[in-house]
Image 1 (tube, helix red, strand yellow):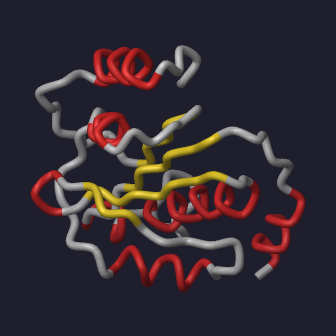
Image 2 (cartoon, rainbow, N blue to C red; image 1 turned 120 degrees about the vertical axis):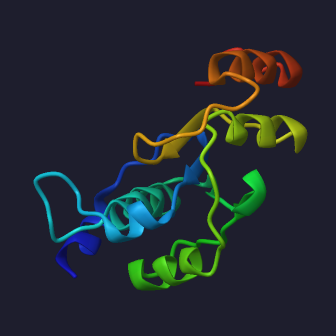
Length: 146
């Protein structure tokens, strides 16, 4: 696949990433705006895969059932199809934008950049993302985390 050859040209940033991917039904069966051959889930998984292939420290999670986040093992040699298959195995659940930040805080995971790949249908949680990121920065002494 031509687009996957382009992954070899990615330039690493050296930052630590946590990527949370939404794989609910509307992401898997929907279509991307102005690109109806690609589902939102495929686009999200490809974005996560780009980071995994370019960076040294990337943690990938999927929003799972019961508001839990499920770690997804992706490595630099994985294909797009293999990555999609791994995400298909995960029972999906609601998306709370603060959950990846709260997960990283609970697990004491140092992160420079949080990335959440989802559509616009998210479930507001008990903690707002802005509050969660402030708590995370304080708890892990990482004031520049975004």
